[in-house]
Image (cartoon, rainbow, N blue to C red; front, side):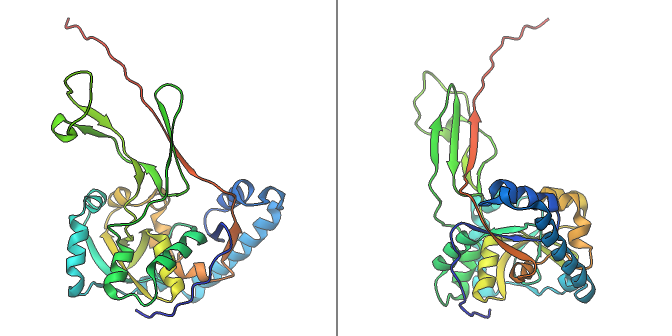
Length: 311
């Protein structure tokens, strides 16, 4: 992996947005609602710059047709197998990759197909600083597929009734799937009487493993955009990734986000889809100063009891 430290610190709360790709309406809405001074910017000017980037993508379709099919992707070295085994044994991994064949691979960054149109520059700065200078292969593997990572602070408020509000600055903040817990899974817990079960919903973060979807000869980055972007900005050419193999549209729906599942041909069959390298093309990517924001998850508990009578 080639390494040329070249991390320039971003200024303030910046978002790097990829212009010229679907959808123009998303870009206009982002600027109007989340960019500093965005409501004062003429939408026609924004449309013009988006159109100019779209024209460049058309040119790239002619001169770089098929580039995404040439991605270099190989299995990881045997020396990293113990680290891969530890990831496979982790509950986060088992819950996230339980439907399709998945393998650990060393993938070329530049030619990864991308569906996410933005990265947060400040978060990328933080990741680059945490990685440190001159990491070896084991350190890089753990950077791409972390089992232990710090999490940002979460603010918890109890609202009226049985409503709770959870807030966090991270865009990765989310509600997990509800779980039904039996008494033997609960351990000691105070209650007003014997417990038959507990329904719980965990609030937290995603596994944040760098993962991708392979269909044919293309690999689409699914998760870990900031880690991939950070490594590419630092001068690395390859990264470690969990790659899921998809052969049918129904399989794609199990793992891909809605944008990809709705229009798979754009990412896996078009001549020249957007790739990670495009974030480093000044003609295509624009840094936007963002207003402060946070992700909020509200949980409301409603219980209904009734008595059923046999007829």
